[in-house]
Image 1 (cartoon, rainbow, N blue to C red):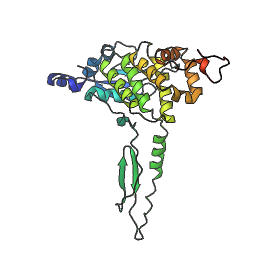
Image 2: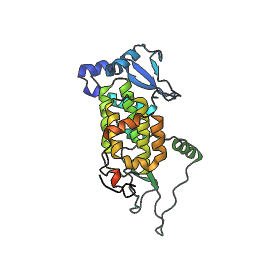
Image 3: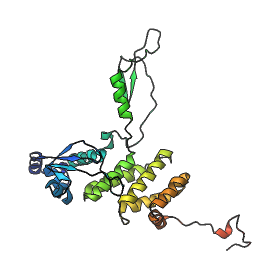
Image 4: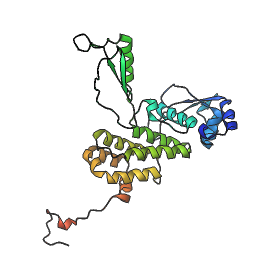
Length: 285
């Protein structure tokens, strides 16, 4: 029984009447609750965790350790929120934690007189529109209070991970805790996003570098997603080489691991070096 969404009526009752178990993200004191019977049903690793079999677990609370060296994957609050959502619903949407899956931003067009405080929403962006004055001009919206300004500043100071990065973090989390269905779902979301044919924008290229870096650090060489990412990277090699600084740094950081993966899929050149215009050789082969 992977999720509550797939449970039978009897299993639902068993889960919802069980004790709540607390998961605490790495580097955070947030306490996220999940029914213990549901957590135990998800994987053998979590079954051991909920029964107190791990040193990090105490009195129904499991604290995911923070790894300063970076050789182990931190479990962020975003990852746990998506995991718990999936555990109950059988799916998760990154919009739940404020991360858009695709760029749906559209230019705002003022379409006429509105009531004061009217909000036009598109995704997570909001536009406050004042009412029209007698001369047809729009009155200025009310100034936010100092408390509201402070709260907005605090919100904006939090850097959200890119959609791809969050999903690869979820994939690594599922791989560590042996949650195959969640692993397959996050892999599907990553591949579907990259399959949208988005332009090679700088932010997308940066996200691909981050995804490769995280995957190379935390996934085994024979991992299915890592191999797919290597194939994708060989296909997008020109875009990645647009930032040779990051590309070379990642090659060095991976100790040749990325280079070996790329060689599995990179397409050989069809032009002989002897046919190059700059070739010092006088004949063609």
